[in-house]
Length: 253
Image 1: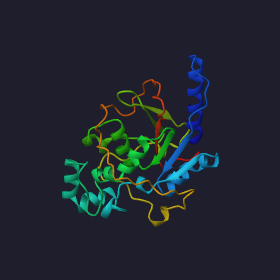
Image 2: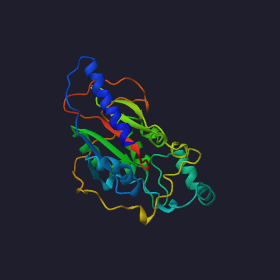
Image 3: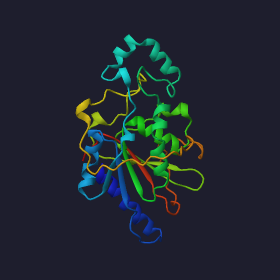
Image 4: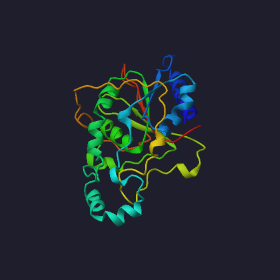
């Protein structure tokens, strides 16, 4: 994943020069991950190359509550009423002792506020539930569409700031084993697959305290809707703004 990303960044710089653009260094790349083992392992290669990697507790996956470690078949058999409620309103519904996508969006507000101020390029490695909320906010998706957003693990989603609405494209990650490419299962809309358990927490590389703030940006209030993974061309970034890159966890070079 890291090598594919760095090749893409260098190719974009060379393409800009070929279009008679300025030969300037790339913006610094910063990496945010959750504290879960798989996200830390995904960022390991970039950390070894000298890139700044910061772990953020708010980027933890949506809490599945009592559904943790339960199979989809068992959830359907034991909680058919809850499954029906979730199918009817997957954004607001929460399973017992779990988080809804709305709860997750509220938890991510400090992260969203901080990433809006980022001037460097930022790579976020997180669980798909977290990527759905971040993508939904940045691309102004309807809240009801967020639980259905899909992020295959052989792609990095690039979101580029633009004047009136952000633009999204995908960066392919080649040569991945076919078994890890599909996104989350679609046949049963449970919150998240079972987590790794207590062993899933890793020692931080350089854990920094999260920046907390009383300010809360309104969810999806600033931009026009966009279709996920639109493979269109990139427009020049606004001055002072870096691009945001999202990638599913559990990818290693």
